Image (cartoon, rainbow, N blue to C red; front, side, top):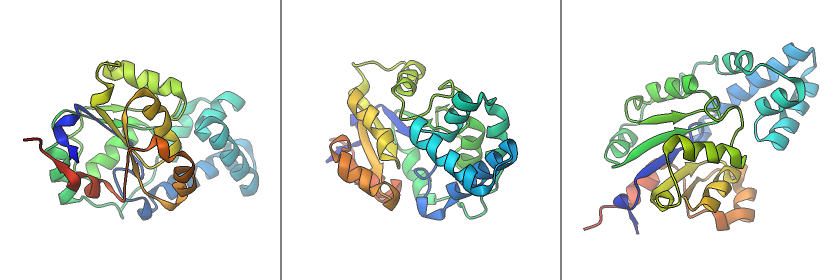
Length: 224
């Protein structure tokens, strides 16, 4: 049984967590990353995709790899890759009502920018329902799942060992949940086929798994 008042801090990843991964929104951003690398470094599409994948696997975020390996100034990259529209994304009235009844602090924890997060939340009509957005700039461009990004998260939220057991974290990417679980945070995986192999390998780091946020929030009960 999951009780709402077991948690004081509700931490949500943004992309593919606050909305259905099957909408394919992040594919557009991925394509923009490829285009940026092609244009910036005069590469063909295969070369660009190779760098994009290699840096993502090595650093957890292609941007981080570009910063470390090619000394890229991140603002140029971020402005370009997030300059997309999402007409397929719609508000979900059920999700809105369920998010709003959660008691405690609600946080977005994303490897994207707060500008991108606010754009998505506005479409979902949830822009006023989160207390804080911790983005890649707050993380000093060190992304999840690097443990340093979680240290920064704890600093931003003023969390410590005494209140981590009152904290729950929702993510679609399994490897991003592992450091949270190691800290003592309750972890929830948003099921998706892309991460299925990682889930099988690392299921011990996952406390709960659901198809989407609505499904999880339907299970919450009030104690007493």
